[in-house]
Length: 155
Length: 188
Image (cartoon, rainbow over all chains, first blue to last red):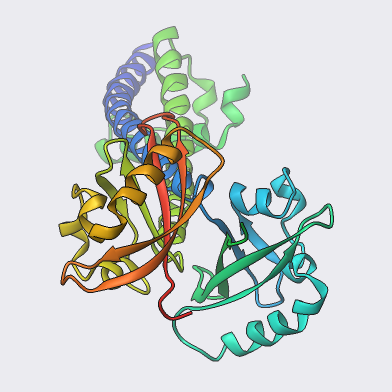
């Protein structure tokens, strides 16, 4: 190695040591932030996933966007992913479909929460009386989502 | 060496050249590959690149976590029913409020005032026994999941309520608890 190379090596080393120190501090901070965020995310995710009521969000065309495990259980489907993107109306008993469609459309013009009672039909064809509470809320992407909770109010 | 084609390495090289030029240590040409680096310099450089990549990934993870936390927190807060969490002694540990102020409406008090109060304080005298039995049943995970009670607001106004409760075993950082959905059925 000649002098010039030594000089460059020393300078790079000095610079690298400085950068590595800084990056290690950042790394530690980021790890801490991520751990805290993950704990907090898991906490809120638990509130949604393990809620005592069924809970779904519906897009403006009535398809299921988000669904929790109680909703899936109530609708007789253990695999959540099978319910996503399905039309919610599919799970409403035939004679109540009109009522829901009407409610769904008219709810768009109203502010605040509303509720109704109707019969829901599980995947296996059995039915139960449900109370739905719902409210339109704008999601982060500015598209409105209908937040619907489902309670089985049959015996 | 493969790291020499890594964008981080190229970026670093650029930075180095700038710094060199600034300090005018030497007349530095742009063919860094032609210089002979000693082992330690190379090791440091690789370590630095690794750290940069890891930190970048952590920043992306942070962004994703933040987004998903906000989404779940929102789902909780704007749920169209009152949703309360009780510890196994029956004290309120969490309550949603955001959009319809359902809980405030239900109990006629501020959210913070409700935290750490016993839920039994909001049960009308005639329903206390039913509540105690129901609460025990939820914790024992028996099949009964719902009940109707008369609840009492902080201003002593009574109203009929429909409750759906489930028991949640402890998981991760969360202690075991009872989760309750409550609707006011006086307006049905």
